[in-house]
Amino acid sequence: MESIEMETLVFRGITLNGILDQLGMPWNLGKVPLVVPLLKLMVNICLVMSVMLFLDRVYMGIVKLFIKLLRRKPEKNYKWEAMKNDIELGSSAFPMVLVQIPMYNEKEVYQLSIGAACALSWPSDRIIVQVLDDSTDLAIKDMVEVECMKWANKGINIKYEIRDNRNGYKAGALKQGLKHSYVSQCDFVAIFDADFQPEPDFLMRTIPFFVHNPEIGLVQARWKFANADECLMTRMQEMSLNYHFIVEQEVGSQTYAFFGFNGTAGVWRIKALDEAGGWKDRTTVEDMDLAVRATLQGWKFVFVNDIKVINELPSTFKALRYQQHRWSCGPANLFRKMAIEIATNKKVTLWKKLYVLYSFFFVRKVVAHIVTFTFYCVVLPLTVLVPEVEVPKWAVVYIPTTITILNAVGTPRSLHLVIFWVVFENVMAMHRTKATFIGLLEIGRVNEWVVTEKLGDASKTKASGTSSVSSVPIKKPSARFWGRVRWLETTVGMFIFFCGWYDFKYGKNHYFVYLFLQCISFFVVGLGYVGTFVSN
Image (cartoon, rainbow, N blue to C red; front, side, top):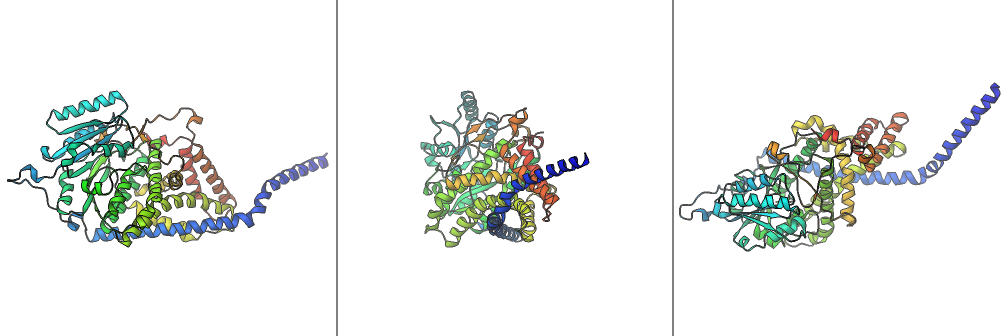
């Protein structure tokens, strides 16, 4: 009887081992001749991209440090004198300013944005507020028109403009708005998305740069986030965007007088806008498109960090995902369309062209997204399964640590959240990488315009919304489990979890702590529980 049981166990063991051997045979056969060389190539490509990103971040960090130490301010770099009333000229001493507010079904925030624009401190006969309403909801359209009439009755020169189509979305609305006859008397145009609320002194602080410096074509203000403390996800966004403004925008302004226009909270010299060819809707980043074309005409840009305009961060993952798709796909697609034009331009210096092509576009808009996801969420986990391929310690520890610290110092109050920021940014990098390739290859959703409905949080904290152009209402997550699962994030999370388990059980790379943290982040998003961290 014992002999039979032993034979049965042996038989079962042999069968199980045989099955495992059969399953592992293709991997073992292809590992050395195919997988190892391919993974080594991927590691080397990622190392090169990591160094490119590292050098760019360190360069900007050093420049920012010198700006801080030398106390370089736009008001010192350029001539700036406060606007004053002239006894003889009266209000005509002030240039004519057009304020454009493009909106689309902005039920929650239209009163806030229109009210802020109408409260700007500027002679009433030298300013025109233009509300460009592309709303398709007739009820909202009526409410916006009534709001404009209310301010008109108070003596504000406000124009309510509509179109019979939505061609070009935001770019189309802005372009159409400039065609009205009364715009010909204006020298400058300030643009605010429907959720932005400038302080009353906004024009008094920005227009003097234009008046005394004819070479300046754009003055950009910084964004201030009213709902940054709403949830963990908005805190993560605040960290990323603060770095963008405090470092990227300011360094570009101070060194090459160039940066990407943020599409709102800025003032354009209309002459510069016209010379650049006006608004174009060929990509989802019409603002960046205009900025690049204007700088190729020789115009200079100024970023003023001290001027802040209140707005609201996306507080749902769906809203953030759509936003990041636009912000990643658009620049990559614009890079594809304009690379040759930039390289062959004769009006700007060689160094400025290299800066725009290499640093601004290639490293920050392409390499940064691809290497963040590919290296830290795909290649690095794969090296656990293929111990023959090693990644240098400097690439795994020193470079990402340095980049993370440089980013985090822009928001000191959130330093304790830096680990959450890292793993969440890696999840978002997956969507950015996908969008980047869509833009570079000009396929699929390359021209998709989706703007989430504003949640109206501004009414609670005197702020609101995000950038706009085409609206899809935000729906509450489905109560059913399968209805809220995001399979892409879940699949990547399962892959990283397996690699982390393998490293913990059999590996020697000791990445398992990072891998487990990263897979949790993917699972939180993928299984629809991101709402746990994004709702009050």
